[in-house]
Amino acid sequence: MQFNFFNLNKLKFNNTLIIGLGLLGGSIAKILKQKNLTREIWAYDLDFETIEVAKKDNIINGYYLLDDDLSKFDLIILSAPLKNYQEIFNKISNKINPKSIFFDIGSIKNFKFKNIPPNFIGCHPIAGSENTGYINSSDKLFADKNFIICNDKSKQNVQIIESLITEIGSKPIYINSSKHDEIFSLVSHLPQFLSFLTVEFSDKNIDNNFFKTAFRLDKSNPEIWEDIFKLNQKNLELFYEKFFNNFVDLIDDLENFDISKYHEFTNKFSIQNSIDDSAFSYFEKNFSWIFFRFLMAISFIKIPEINLYQSYAGKGFIDFISIINICKFDKAKCNNLVKQNTHQIINLFNQISQ
Image: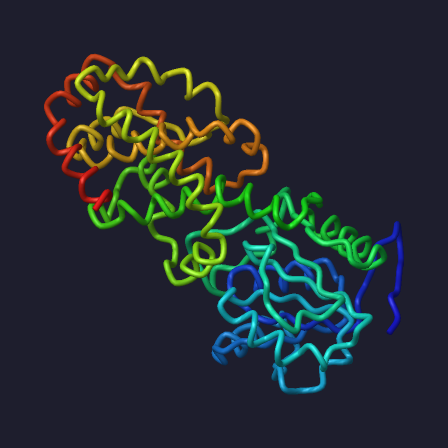
């Protein structure tokens, strides 16, 4: 295997295999192609139509089976659902070149799968979207995003991955696997879990841009997140308990609620989600379930560790808490609406508490 370095340590691979050509896998294929970081790109995906589309797009050269000899690949990127990791490790552990650069881009890092090749390095780009699949992939997805590197089994391989991350426009950050899962259970997995809790009674066709953004996580694919929640259950349960205790305190004190107490939070976080008068009209018409999510966001950001881990958060975190901007509406009207809708708000709380 040879690595060809040119310009200022800019590396170029010979043959790249991407396992899973969805949103992230398709995006990394496109940026590798756009940056000319590899001579050829091959892919494995269960959806053969996706493979054909990527070939027509001139992004990949073709298709490889995991039962094939994979020793020619000097770069392998695992971008499959976590539920498929064990099967994939079982199939490829003896087929890949032990000197290849092999990393994943999944959301959990402290996993206990068997047959993990010794050259595997866990990574996690802090990038994504509620829209999944290759059709939504983009060569801009990783631009200016943090890209976590968790393992340091091979100093040389880590350095090459760091160079690759830099070349695609991301910022490499080192965190050990256990700490990674703790941090992202709070700033990524918990906001998504809380969004799913209320999806049944929130509007499925929001026509206001502010609230579309604030409820964006509702549209995420639950099948993808189910395995993340399961594999990071211990950390998720720890922070959910802290969230829930905060939430109970707010619900128990609704009769004394004053929205002006929470205006400080709008200045604490860098939220770009703009709010206007049309948003208040929508808010007033759909007060109970929107205000309920507001209480969830307040309960979430009152978790003490938020202050420690906020800097690692991605766009999902910011969008989820952006609903706290309703503090900017007329305070007297908001407080009066709380009094008028207290019974409905408590009923919603009872629904998620059962």
